[in-house]
Image: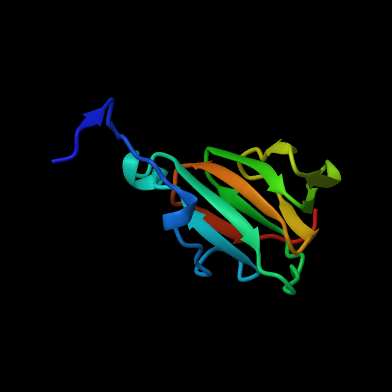
Length: 132
């Protein structure tokens, strides 16, 4: 039986034994699960997301039905456009809090782009949106 502390399990994720997989929200990205979903019984999720070299974003507007979404870029750069906020170039060291339900789109990214995404809850719905 897994020991829990305030309904959370201890977990560690190492890059050398955690594979990136292509089955994720966007086909032009690969995702590495950090084990937070299982450790928090779905209350939170965290991924390392990296660009698939040579693949571009279609720039589709969308929104997410969740309570919290934070993105921190660790490598390369990515351009997001946000409803009422315009385009923002995020590069290594940049962080953005995407409020619940904000319409946004990924416009373009470098082939070496890598970021960390922290979300709550771990499973959420995404809606296609028209441009704001």
